[in-house]
Length: 102
Image (cartoon, rainbow, N blue to C red; front, side, top):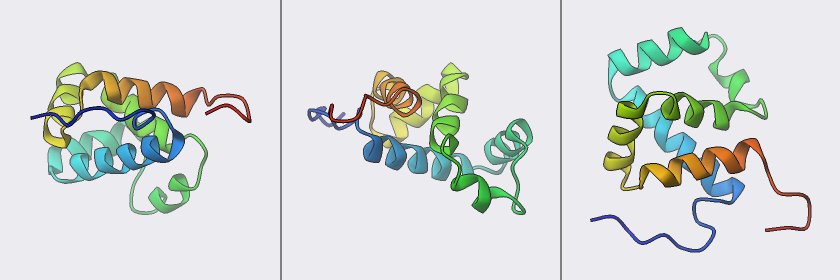
C-alpha cells in the first residue's frame, strides 16, 4: 500500500536527494541495472564519489529512471512511491524555486 503523500514530501530538495539515493541503491541492487546506469552515465568507482558532489548528480539519477518508464515504475513500486512523485522530485531538483519560496 502506498503511503499518502505529505505536503512537500516529494517536492523539497532534501527529499528529492533522499529519493535519488534510494534510486541509486535500487540500481546498485541488481548488477545488470547498475552496469547499464554506469555505462550510460560514464560513472564508475573511480569518479562516483566526485560526481556525487556535483550539483546535478541527484537529478541525473532520477532523470535516468524517468527516461525508462518500466524502470521508473519498478523503482516506484519497490520504494513505495507513485511514479509521479519521482517525476515531481526530478523537476524540483532541476528547477528549484527562487530563494524564499518553499
